[in-house]
Length: 113
Ligand code: 5GP
Ligand code: ZN
Image (cartoon, protein in one colour):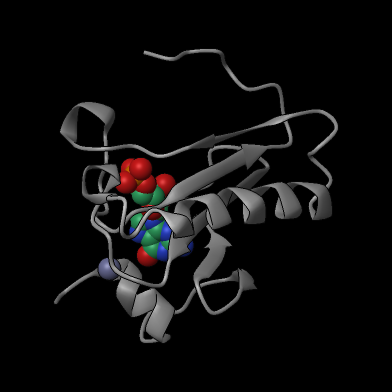
C-alpha cells in the first residue's frame, strides 16, 4: 500500500523523530502551524477516525498518553495545547493514515468550525 506515513515509519522518507515505541511514532510536522506541532501516529495503518473499531481502538488511548507525556517534555503542558485529528474532506484531512496533531507553544485560535 502506498502511504506517506507508513513510509515515514519505515524510514523510507526522512522525518524528525520526537518519540517512538512499539505502537506509535511521533515526528515534527513538515509545515508547523504552531511553535510545537508534532504528529503522533499508530504504527499499524488505520486510515482515519472512520476506521477506528473496538478491535483496534486501544492504540488511540495510548496516543493520548503519549501526547500528554510529550506536552510535558516539550514544555507546553502548563500553558495548554490542542490534540486534534482531522477526518475526511470536510475536516481537511490530507494524509489518510490516522494522525493526531499536538499543537502548542502559543495562544491557539478557538475555532472549532
Ligand atoms: P491533515 O491535514 O491530514 O490533518 O494533516 C496532515 C499533516 O501532515 C499536515 O499538517 C502536513 O503538514 C503534514 N505532512 C504532510 N506531508 C508530510 C511529510 O512528508 N513530513 C512531515 N513531517 N509532515 C508532513
Ligand atoms: Zn499508512
